[in-house]
Image (spheres, one colour):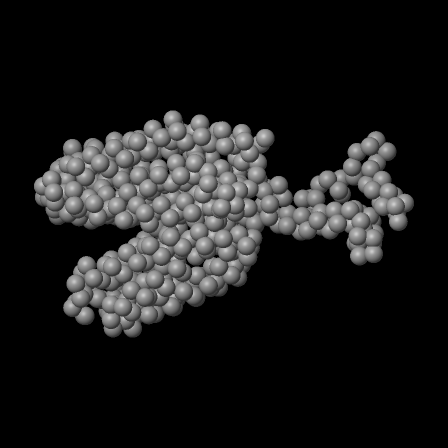
Length: 479
């Protein structure tokens, strides 16, 4: 038996002492060398190291057998899923007034459902990410699509606030499952372009509402909000369910076909979620995420009352021949730039580094918020500066997931990015403070100052705190 093992091992070496191409270049195609067949036949009886190695190599070859274009197909499938769940968040505002008018519930009571949705969509993503890392993306997205559909169908029949709240929780769990899976899968398939891949995936979350906001609005007016909830809920859920069948788990980074040179520093080992939460560098990223998300939301979530106080909301604005009321124009720019910024800054971060890009984007956000307050009384300036604020804010949904995967590895990328994504839910709890600040001070001055300062601090932290901490962490991972 020892002689057989020795002969098998030595047959993989050529006369010059180098390994045969079939053994080293597993990504080039299936293993066809005669030794593979021999090793497989002997694996059960001999249980030799070579047999085990050959089996692993065969699996690796199968995982790497996809053409380079395959991972782009996976990315597109994820974007489609994200577009289908976008209206659960961005389309909600269309349903609020019809629900209030029919049932007589207060607007505040109805909006509690949206708060429940945001919290369940964000704070459960770590659990859903763990399931993705454990079982792959297909079953998690499949269940998520079903829950999203059920949530909206329940909304169409809700005759009590309790049922409306329960439906929001169901839809939130489903949306979080789809969102966390698609972002996590993009991070795994694109270790060389994580910023761009995460940005394109996150952009799909906004693009979906841009494509369907008009049809949903028209459907509500013609058939009622209940029918819109029912049919769009079923349609969106079915599409996600069908697409989920084609999602596949990404192979290990070293076995990916078609990856280009990686220009940013990445860890040499994979950290479990339990290890991640014990790393100070994670909590630095979390704090930065909360500050930027809350700072941007405090300025952007109050656009309507700010425009009203500035007395410019209904003033027509003409930009390049397009004429719209100032507030409508600003909200339209939100949809466009909040989507474009995610792949743009994600791509930039792939080229120059995560912290450098964070510093630039967060500093722009800080300046934009101050400028909006100082010059926003002019309708044209209000629209343009609103665009700058949205453009410098939405990139957090590509920069932070890609930074997280670079820092803690690909194997548990979905769960770890999910842990960081809960910062969105935390930030949403801070947004009502903007109304308290405005009411207590009698103006929006304090709101804008606080939002600007939070972004400025995050920009400085990216360069002077996060950058050296990540460098030390990555050096330790190579030790």
